[in-house]
Length: 362
Image (tube, rainbow, N blue to C red; front, side, top):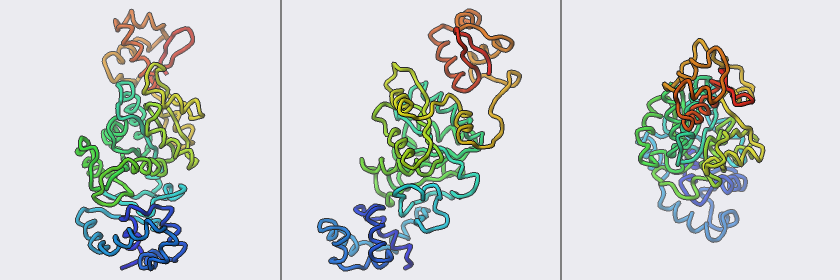
């Protein structure tokens, strides 16, 4: 076996993470030597409780058989020393020493390094869905790869919108890459692979998700991305941990403001209060990151609303700015619904709110 195979063997043992593995390499000089070390030497590094568990695992575990399992499942793997290992991910404090890969993807090409994470709540609202779809579509059309966690809600919306706009997406799992969690996203999982996307995990093949695997997954999502966007989430949302991981890796964090009455806007609102950058459009993100791309702005002549209500408003504001009450009167849209429609159009950078309650096209 080659040195890389022994890295794989250590990754299959749940008691050794990036920190312990790094110390083993430092102590023994190679994964092969660490794998074959005696119990007394291992005990100095792993401790009295973990060492006998590892030795028992080592006796029963066949690295060649495991490599064959990976081949049958069409799963490859990368170790930290591989030239194809994602350069962005390698820069975080404790990158995965083995990364399991389902699908073919060049992480280090110039176009694929332009990656942004979009994360948020599983219990997505209509507001969160509209915001996530709008931001994702514009970023994909601007040439960005979208990274998320394949969870229900914001994650799934970001992945689906990316695929719907012929973009590339990376899904990071808290389980083995051969598992689909949650099961409801099986079709989405398959679609990502079929459309030049990729599924990643540091968790061994066949291992189900656990409570501790999700925080680890979040750091990978942040590490693969040039920036993280949180569109919607409660105050204790896992998306906030992804944002914290991004900050720890010196990556920008963007947050979408939401209604103060919504519990699912407390997460983004709290991030903004702590210094995250408030955004209302994809252009805000692109401008902040300093990428040179095609102009994201649109003119009134080619603007098309995504709904009948939006088109009515666009037609009405083509030549003049109007007050909220006047828009409601002329379009016949109820005030309660109009407020939401106008907010969505503002998020999409279709129109802008002015002082005095007036609205106009961008």
